[in-house]
Image (tube, rainbow over all chains, first blue to last red; front, side, top):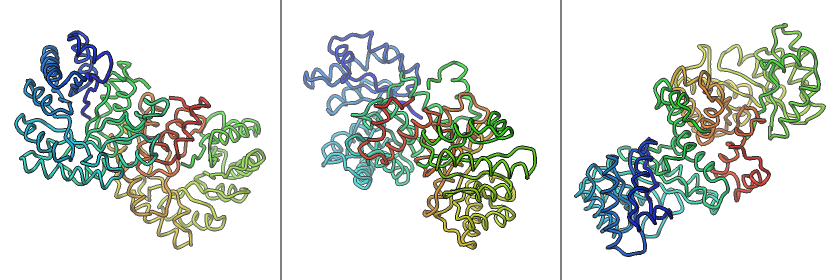
Length: 267
Length: 267
């Protein structure tokens, strides 16, 4: 499963400070440690409240500094099309645009960008009215994105649909809604890929990481190709390791056995 | 999810000794501790190598002694129809017959017994040729059992189909075979229930309990109604607790939150 490392995100306080103060070391360390822990992509989100121009400069600077130490592809993550464009332009290897939704404005501004930079796309299963509460609504959003992408000549293979997770503490049905949406996406768009930021599921609950790990295992079986998470969380990464094995993606259990021998499995 | 406590089984050395020496205390303690930990049924397997007559007497004695301390329903577990009959006859509350297969001899001898004692049935997805290696073969075995049961007037609601788990260390495809069989059983026989003894999946691997827990979570999402396991394994039971919540079966997360407050969640 493809891991998108989530740690370079200005919503996290020390990262935000590092972005504001241009602290190269902290950001480069996060890039290297995430790559070393198995991240296949690194998410880069530099959103602050200092305005578009500052965020554009931050994005360009972070992408440049991260590329100095790793050649891992980047997931350029911003709500602002100008910041996205600045990041994609700076990428030296293939990139991912994070994220589009089924909102017309988003589709019209972001799909041409993805096409221009030949980026993969994270596509959130939500539209003009926000996140639909049920499977049907989320699938409709995916369908709208898929149709739009085709118009712009973007193949389904380039899209990672995110079924979105909402807190089960607020609505107990939401775990199953996400899992079933995932399964339906795989059934309706077999060429497309899927991704998920799992941690929203446990918002408001104690022992969140335990809930996240358990949910992630079910999501893997439901058809998850990729996840946006903290690759330094050894317990989460161990759950993925065993999940891959149980699902038959680890020939002769070699990767699991190697992790065991290297004492990398954390239960 | 219904938990069938697996611990009163003469394949386990101290239990075997307790059965041979008629050690009431150990067996009654196992019955009480499993019930207190959330077992809804207790499996009773007294098979020794001392012959049918001894096993019959052992089964009658164990059922009697267990009933002295708990009124939990029992799963009478034996390869020998005479031992099964002796156990079912002694049961004071509803019982489960563990297990039938799609072998003609088994069906002909055991289904009349299940009908006579109005027992629920554990039905293993295997036939004359052993355990089929693929989903189709296992489903055919289930189909044969379902057809036979109907002939004897046994409703599908009374049957717990076990898709069977084989070691992924021997055949890496087997995890997915079990999960997909489970899902197909739920699709083909919506009135029937499912069960599984998860631990075979990890045979030959290190940190087996970790593999078992992870697999169990996926099986819950695939449609598991019941599991045969050690209810004293707090980590396994915690995984079930969080699994039930994520699947929407824990209104307002109350059961999870209560377990957390009582410090019963073991990660």
